[in-house]
Image 1 (cartoon, rainbow, N blue to C red):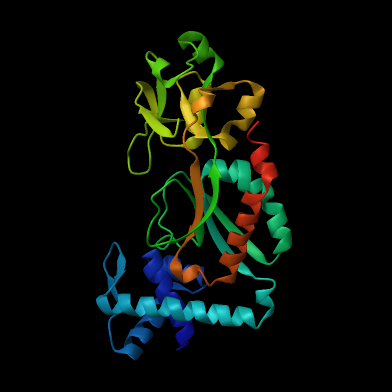
Image 2: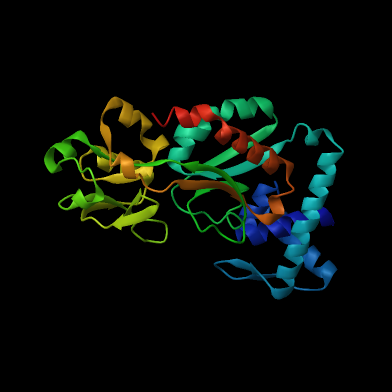
Length: 304
């Protein structure tokens, strides 16, 4: 039995909650996957996994063994990287999760530079506006905005994103242009539904205080692109990080309102599971993100 491979397989099963996907991620056939876990349990003399028709979960012993395995595997990966070419030129697959808007407008346009710098890394990018479970879904790192963040993840702050309140020209022609939050009576908003089902109020920062307003809404959406599209269609006011509507503001399809009392800045962080913090693949990508977001030009071009 290859104990190192068995530990890798076991941790992947715990993280993904499935034998098939875990074995596939390591290039193992289903029969080999089951056999290797049986050999590992026999070698240790304990049951590591509880299997049902719907899911696989670790036993009490399995949970303790998993925690030790992730530390050992991270140490091995770091040791190999320190003494090998992988330290200078990491290789392998890196799984990343981004929101649709950040992927499309910010990160992916800059990825050619990262790929040229690390040509042996293979990126697997998932995009969604939901909060993925990094460990269970086998994701190495993700960009997360707002807070509070999952305390079970390592978080590295990247940038404080400027936010704006905006509306379409047709909407403003119909409802008027408010000059203060107190003039929002008679206006309406597009509601954004978060991953936990909550609907967010509009926020305005003035004289060091944050004011909140709940406006009537005829439509609610759960995706950032749909949120902006609904605003462009004249369905109400929205508040978004300015990078997401730079093109619309320049083209004039959207107009910023209440610029003197913009919403509070929106903190953006990169998060990853604790056992991935020693991974060279994750570290170079996180460092690259830090470089990307400290470059003044990308923020300047989105804040005219």
